[in-house]
Length: 161
Image (cartoon, rainbow, N blue to C red; front, top):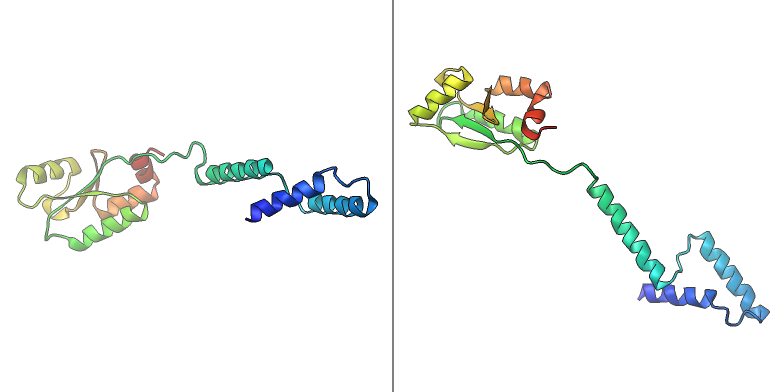
């Protein structure tokens, strides 16, 4: 409704009809000048559509800048034993969650082969679980993860940025 009024008023002040009469021409010229001064809020339907398309494109550029495509994260796996070091697991999840990293949690309770693999790769003891792996490379426990994060290597390893 508002758009139709805007376009109708624009048509009224831009048409040459009635310009021969001073009582019509002068108010139209004043209305044209005021319209230009205000940034031309009264405009044709085509101009209105063009402005809306430009506004939509501008918003899209702001929300989705070029080159800022979201990259998939490398696999982040946290190996833990169900009833061992539960607080440590919570702290690891807080660090990873703070960086918007979604880890895969794997409970290795009773899986001696996986526990052996984790201990060998992470160079740790069984009581040091949970252990974080990023892209198949052992990072370590909570302290090692925090050091890895503060050095900036965590985001590089996970997102390649």
